[in-house]
Amino acid sequence: MKRVVLIEPARSYRTSDFMYGAASLGLEVLVVSDEPNPLGEDLARFVDVDFGDIEKSVERVAPIAFEFQADAIVAIDDKGLALAAAIGEATGISAISVDAVNRSMNKSEMRRVLAQSQIPQPEFEVLELGQNYDLVSKIKNFSNSIGGFPLIIKPTGLSGSRGVVKVSGVDGIPDALATVEKAAEMFNQIDRTILIERYIDGTEFAVEGVVSGGKPEVLAIFDKPRPLVGPYFEETIYLLPSAANAGLQQQMEDLVIRSVVALGIDVGAFHAEVRVEGYVPSEKVGHVISATKVFLIELAARSIGGKCSKSLRFKNGRTLEEVLLARQLGIDLEGRTKARQQVSGVLMIPTPKEGILKSVSGEEAAAGIPCVTEIDISTPIGSYLRPVPFSDGYLGFVFAKGPSRSKVLDALNQAETLLEFEIDQQSLTDEC
Image (cartoon, rainbow, N blue to C red):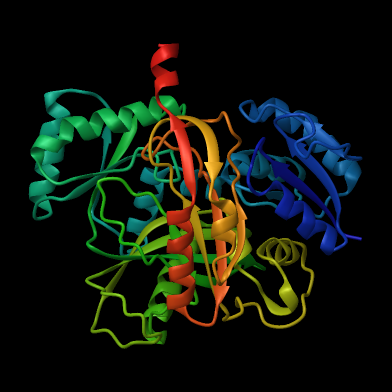
């Protein structure tokens, strides 16, 4: 029987899906988390550690992993990647490398490595965060060097669109810097560097894959049917299969695989965001578009975030988590790897405003819409909410499947209009 160490950060969306995936593969599991009993139940093999103290955590977990005779160490999301890599380095157990984690989790380092490998990506510059004229002047000079605005300004160590701002002119730079600095402080980014990039005007796609035996493999390409044009970049709908023609999909796959190799991601999942400059999407699947250029925007050494993996199914109903675990453990699954080509989609319910979540309504009506398969309101009543660019999660998720892209997309849009969230902003004023 194969054995796996799962690094499961507290309150991760992915915990239950990976546990179910491990159970379906018949794996023995050792859970490492940063809070006791992350599943709210007794686990035969469980270790709680401080993810912020990698050295002590490795000292505690390494001998336990040896005794457990683990075959692999898997971080279920990016919060546990550094620890997974460090345990793997200390024990020799299969895990992503420390170098790959460092390159993929720091956006400036990622950009530098990709530039060395001549990977198509936005022009960029790395600067030190600080509210002063010199920094504004440097950003203005960078803009002039690449042909002008708009630009993207982002922290180098955050994910999930936190602190990412589009700037359309010099006057917007100070406010953008204030936003980036606030996000960095709010989410404890110690590194003071920021990334300035050329804004790529085009359509964005998400590319999901896995590395096994040192070979990257693309599992699925998601369309993002709602334009992401800023000033902030809250993702809402993923849809598959992609409507892009085969040639463009191959371009995206080739770009992402080259990037994975360049960053040295040697095992486990990867999730990429790419932009196709000048691309105008068509609802006709496979529609031929004139020549376009594909840019690598982000690449993370983890699988798709939130609960979006539920929209993916493989041969015999296999889940993404089953596929990822099987690949790293060398388990041969039946049938093809690529996601089944049934039309499916997920709505990541956006947070409309800051405040305390008081109530949710409309779930029954939304669930009754044809093609909607599940409504998952994952945010508990009483939670403190922030919209992008300071959000650290979604209100919930809506899943849909159907005979056509238009029907699935319509179902997700209709469901969003029926769901109502009472968010109390007055309580924030009272607390102040």
